[in-house]
Length: 591
Image (cartoon, one colour):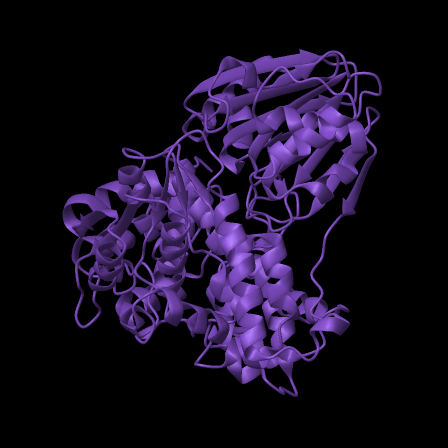
């Protein structure tokens, strides 16, 4: 797990190594254990290392193999790298390190970009070919690892974070109108290739981009999800699906133990993270480090779920760490740092929770497993059941998930951003694609391929990597995701959602953790804005810089500020916090 950046030139001008160094410096938190810079001809790569596998200097990056003429900057982890290494050694390849980076490099030489089909893991990488001058950029199937890029005069730059590209300079920072619509309408999810800034784009998940020395570029999508069951699965019972799911989940959790350092667990006290702890204990892990965070209660909204995480910690005798955060003393002072760590604006209240939790966790371990993705894969959200038999899937999904109507969006933003209903068009186009016929499956697919990538997964990656902490997500093992997609809807939706996971959970963990209201990392202070937090938001929205940007209509801002609690989204998020967060992010990024 690391950070990478680089540049390829299409003209005869030299690479700006000063800009590349500035980009590399911006991603130091992602890789505090080492750094490197490599240049050959018109291509340069830089890397910041977080040492997880093969802690020696033999695995340092950028990694150059003169024998095969390839160089790589790699971020992520290939969990089956030992098996692939053995296969490559059988083909005659010789290795000078013991990590997964060199396996990726040799696999690319052996199989070309089709090597990604063999990888189990999370990854983003750039491979430079000495002889052809070609650069290949790759992102994993579910977008767990990020990769941003920006066109610059005569070349292309890329990096693990958007702020790194800003640090290199020369990037257009005007607001992208389509991205603003997604941010305000599509629950702050801005799908690839867009970002909130017009000059920066991101590589979509499951995408390979080939960049030729003359500037020609070609994208290939190498993976998709099919929701059609295989013939041999059509008559399987609920019990059969339980066994298949449990077996796949055991494998997913075991795969994510591959490391030369200890692996802990982010334990919210919910079903998903509790299952991970149970399966790790089942596999012989003892004294697992588990971590939970809690905030103060606001009104009737409780700010922690320690009562449930304590049950799991006691049941499996973990080394449990509880982090309590007081809004006045820690949340507000740390908010600017948290926002600065965001590659893109992230409006979810629990971002600060992950940020502060990661700060504490990084003092104890360098790798954690996390339960992100289970709801999107196994239908745990409340908007899935109403999709059953829907005669208007696009409308029903938008009504349950989206923050505003297009008319509300037009009332909120400055008229120069008024345009087409980009978010509704996005949903309609995605739902119209082949491969997911049932309305529920259409909703699950868009959530897995778009919402999950640019909300929960990005949130966890950014906030953990802000402290040099690697987060692994077993529920997003691609084989488990494929299996869940083929499972009949009734098995996922029963028992008020995630039925098959709950059935498995009843065999492994205390039922009191399962039979309770759904929770998350609650941060009431950012949902019900009060006191010092509200005052800070008011000052921000009335600041000269915010007025100069002119993103939002003043009357709309005044309406939100007059009664913050009266303006919540269908998913119970604060509309005031949403607009404030965008302004705060732009300010912290110097835009």
